[in-house]
Length: 268
Image (cartoon, rainbow, N blue to C red; front, side, top):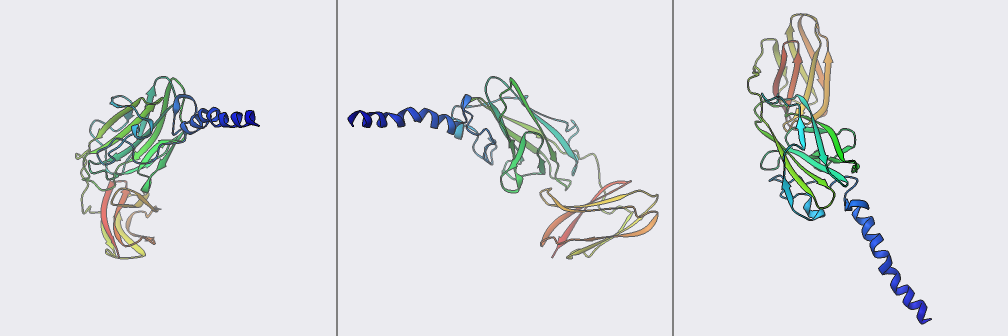
């Protein structure tokens, strides 16, 4: 009986490394192989990075994040591509977010292969599966805020190359102010009721036979899901948009052959 008691007392000790390994993600101690929890990009607004879970010291680096935002800057409402690249030995993962220095989400994110959105209002993008190749990469998209005049946006990113090798970086995205958008283009003859609710009418007077696309965004650049695409033809026409938006301020983006035009909408 005494021998049996000794054997049982040793059993938890033998199982402890297996339990620890399971919690930490197995090989290379990747604690979050299925994605990082929200709020760990190292941005001033987040105030923390991946060292919270992985330990070690975060090292500022460059070159792990690239985009096709031109040197002239982003254009309001346009969508751009981003690529994360991490090189080294061990499992790799990341988390990124477009913010201002106060930590406010600017624009919206769209996940790509091997990535996912997390956090309130999909504020962050992270890996959905850690990669163990010598060079790991992920792609995702960012849609710039719909309202011109937002200004500089910083894409903050934290990457993990095995544990605890933490990399911090940021990419400054300047706004292109050289593309002017008239507040009252002559082809828009009316947008009403504004303020209003449930329904919106857009009166146009266009030349040519080109499609017109209307989209409604939140002030942070999130698409509300309200889109209308019509081909009104030449001359005076009216586009009707039914919606069930909650009370608040939104942005209407109207795309025609003459370019983009933005108008603020008040929903009551």
